[in-house]
Length: 119
Image (cartoon, rainbow, N blue to C red; front, side, top):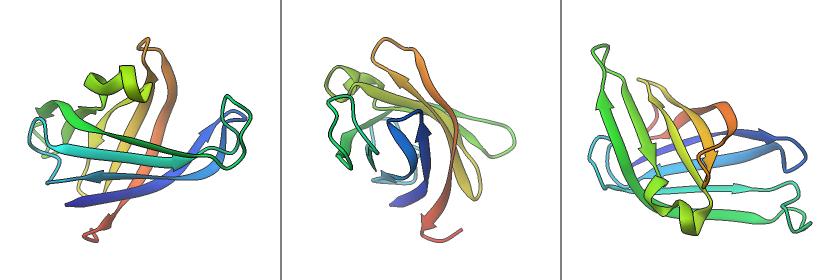
């Protein structure tokens, strides 16, 4: 299991909120389980501090020559979760872009540090 934690900023929806991504394995196997969770500062319905939980799988994987991996997750679940992610796994962290179900970029360069096991 790998756990990554960072900060999420998305206009008035998320201002310096914590985002956590949990991989059921080592983020290197297609279809492995993934959970992404964060809190909205204010969601689209106007609820403040609303939790957002997204459960799905790793849908894209490409190993790079420098030992890093390009990944996509929750894309196959975008109809239910609305958001999906594309990013790069490094030796110490995770850099993500968040897309909506229409494949429109919502947030770029979300930087997360590996928090379990520690890097």
